[in-house]
Image (cartoon, rainbow, N blue to C red; front, side):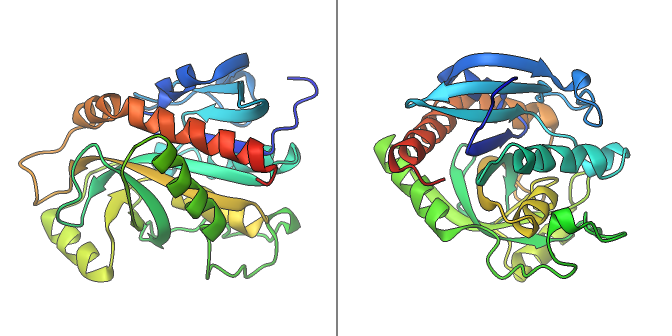
Length: 261
C-alpha cells in the first residue's frame, strides 16, 4: 500500500468484520501476506488489512486480530500496533465483542472502555526491553485517551446510537469464564469481560499512541445466562452491525474534520 499515511488505525474484533462495508475500500491485503502476522485462526476474524476512506480522510483497518491463546507468541498480537506506529498513526481504536458482567448491560449494547483490568496473567512487555515500546516501566494511569472517549460519545450521538461506559477485563481464554470467576470480576470492578484488547492497549499506550476502546456486548457472562458459545457472539454482533458501523464512521469523520487524531 504505497504512500499510506493513516492518522487513525482501527482493529476490528470478533463479529466486527463487516464494519468495513460502511467505508470506502481503497485496497486490501491478506494477513497471510504480512510477514509476522499470518492468517487468523478464529471465526469472525477475516484476516485482512484494509485501506479505506471516510469523510475525506484515510483510515487503516485491521479486520480481525491474533490472540494470545492461539499459542504463537506476542509477535502477531503486537504487529498491528507496531505497523500503526511505523506508518505514523497518532491514534488506535481497539474493538471487541465482550460478555456483560455488570447487571443490566444488555446484549447488543456498545460500551466505551474507560479503563481495563489485565487478568490474563501475562503482559506483552515482558522480556528484553525494546525502546520502540517506550520506557521500561510505562505509566498506565490513563491508557484510554479522554478526548477520544469524548469523541466516541459525540460520534454515537451523531449516529443516534446509545452507548455506555465501563471497565473491560481481559482473560487469556480460550475457555469462557466460570460463574464464580464472573462474581469475582464484578467485585473487582469489571463491567465486561473478553479475551483481547488489553495487550494491544498496553503496547499502544506505551509506544505513545492515543488509545480508544469500544466493546459490543454480545452476551451476558457466565452465571447470568444458561450457556455461552462463539456462535452466539457472532450472531449478536451481526445484529449490532449497523450501530457499530455508524459509530465508527462518525468517529472517523469527526477525526478528519477536526484534524486531530
